[in-house]
Image 1 (tube, rainbow, N blue to C red):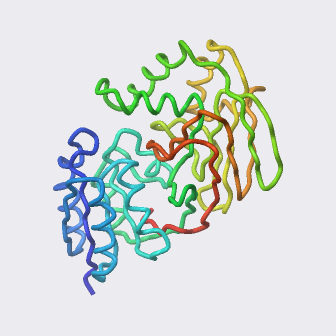
Image 2 (image 1 turned 45 degrees about the horizontal axis):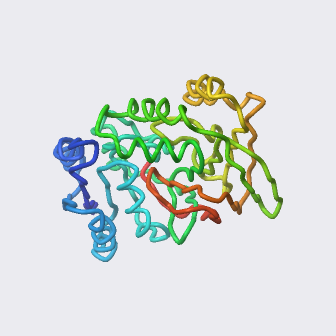
Length: 290
């Protein structure tokens, strides 16, 4: 039988990249023998609504063309539905796609994974009644995220780099209470990040070594360091080599609570809300083509 795939396109992702790659993806899917129904989003709410329609339609899978924000919205509906979910990266960070091994700059190759049809189940984090596909950030990194989201220049990962330099000028350590599976840790830190996968911010391996299907949340705490030391640490995040630094503390658990007055948490690059926040894990909640 011919497989039917719903192609959901966010045309504004990556400053228009989503619209540009959609025809390439559709052609690759159809060349692979799939029947394609294409949907174009006009607002954020469309992603969830269309995903729900796709599930009800009896399609064999859905492919989302967009960035981490689009993936986040789709995951709210597709999680635990059993609907296979393909990712065509077209955003600024693309960290979920990176975490499941989807080619980031080759839409034909990403579409070919959907044609092949091999799937795997991956974990999602849960917080404030939302599913999280990558990392919950709270601290210096969330401030960088906020600044980067407000910037119109430069494009791509360079935006996060510039935002990092800007935030470094005034940032001071924050006092946290971090509870992991009931064990309480009170500490000052530059940031606390909790993830099911290893990266955020366009490839920074803040939770290096995190397994996206191990049923656990990885916690990375960067203790107080000088601005210069933090700046020197950021290149190491791209390789995950920061884990050997004496100021970096890592933990793993199934239930994490972050507390700190005045800190706003970000998740999948978007505002999650003010701390405190309780973060859990939904093992194998999302089925992906990968």
